[in-house]
Length: 282
Image 1 (cartoon, rainbow, N blue to C red):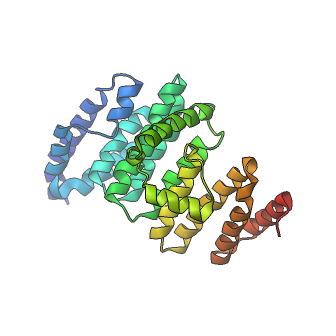
Image 2: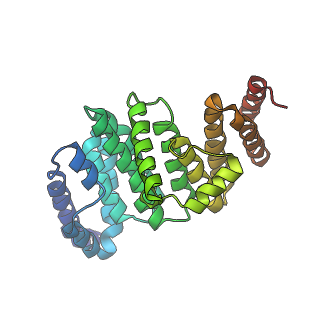
């Protein structure tokens, strides 16, 4: 054991020094949000050079990340957590942890709505463009991305939620004008399938994207608990949409019944009863 640690120490020291240097490069909220998920080429070389000690280095970084989270030092945690995505790129929990921290913890520390949006957007892009690209069949990442659209953009969890929705609408309108949604990771054929399956969507609304990514996740989900979580995102999204467009209510109830059939829950049963009464459904 002593021999292994002796050989590992130079590598760990290199990681620590590189991490410290990299963290000191922050130059404002916008640049930090852009660089948080993109260590330099030199950092990539350091990670590649760890070889068999990569797992040990990841444990050291995880330990430090836990300490920073406990201390509420989220901005530093955001920088450090990006190293985890390089050390453990095929561990979904790493991507979910990092993206959540960016979108929920770091964002609310920013002074303006515009700065907050950059961090929220960085969290979503991290999951969509990197996490799912490297882990295309993992339902956990689809669920996390769908939740961000439903809760962070589609709800009132954040005082800047209206600003986020405006930014998303502007982005989607731009994609519509160009005739392609590649910039936001959406496939036109799949969007049409969502319209057909759940009802015509307003794709400038984050609720439509919540449905899209949850439905994508269902395609890959095999475990009962993963399917239950994704079903929950779908019926809750449709329930929220029903408040402004009652036409979605019947489909929301159908999804709740499907979810209940797959995994019965007394709480879900109560929700269904109240929902049916509210919309006069059978």
